[in-house]
Image (cartoon, rainbow, N blue to C red; front, side, top):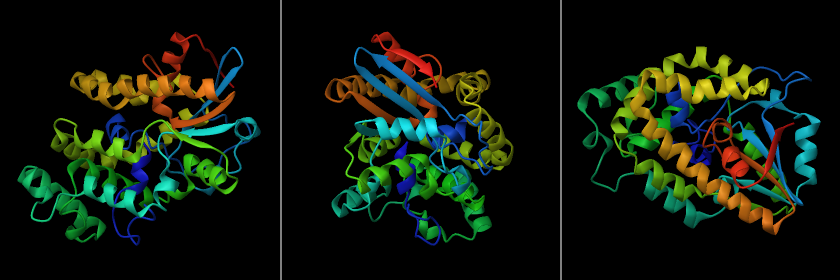
Length: 309
């Protein structure tokens, strides 16, 4: 989800802006710190139907400069496309003051209300302990809505490990598209994503689990890095979905809200865009491209032939 790049802390804490569950919190903000080798694939798929071609790139929302340059197959697919398609155009948002104000309204409780009024004292105490550890003033989180708080604290932890949303793959292509006036289309919008996050049931539970699982990041990131670099769809599916559901079957409902329902709508919009443009270059979180009820699965059902390249 692109909105993770707009989570609100002062810029000296967030630059612009584990198990599978904190990845769900980040909507699959895949990250890594290792240099890409020449044979690293990444997750790039090609879907074709008649004269239409859709390139689908699994997104890395936080990365570092060691990821560049991308392999030629990815760069060539972008260059040959007529339009860039993303979940949400965060680059455009950054130059739109009115939209930024909407983001703030969706991210924070109004004056007079506070996060601690919406979570238990125990969970708020966990958050306070984390803030003290990271030397972040509590006031920066005091009015955040629970979903925004869990995204922001995850971002802080990832950035503390040298990762940067400004080096993300989606931003990389968005900046190119804006610079060269390439058409850019959204599958969703930042506001849509915020509304979805704020409508989740049991947000306190997700905030608590995020706080408890951040310590697993050092073990989880290398596993996810290896799966993405190898373009291993099966390993990605296991990490994002299967392993978590085996331990917590109740999270199947969360997957439906955060992935499956959105995947259906994304696939519909991609089909519509493919009728308007001959070649699309689509950048979405890699979790949307693997397993059953994925974007690629729905495109196959619509008559597209899909292969990994």
